[in-house]
Length: 136
Image (cartoon, helix red, strand yellow):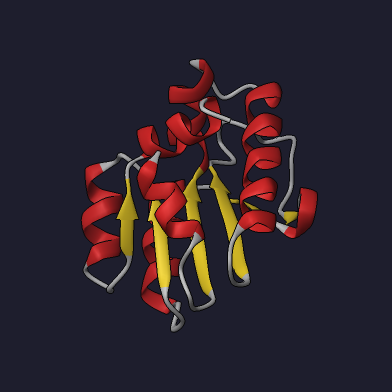
């Protein structure tokens, strides 16, 4: 939880990539629409509370939710559903490689964490975001 509060106090604008289902499984045990909605709303609140502008991008596996599409989410966050054949892990690592501004990634997946750190991202465990959400 402290890691998320620390992130919200960063003095420079940054991009926050969130491994959506990695967080929702820890938040509510599943990838259902209610869990996605709750996470998206909480990330919208995080964006509003941050000291500087934050580009929040939540990446979800489209294989788990084929009925939804990439687009704007609540409060100006961006919801990104992977293309068929790609995983959220693949997409997050790709975005981490392409992002030039300061970057933070939320995931507990080892490959996502290590792949993102390789490109200079600050990485926060999904459990820290869940604790922040539940502690509100």
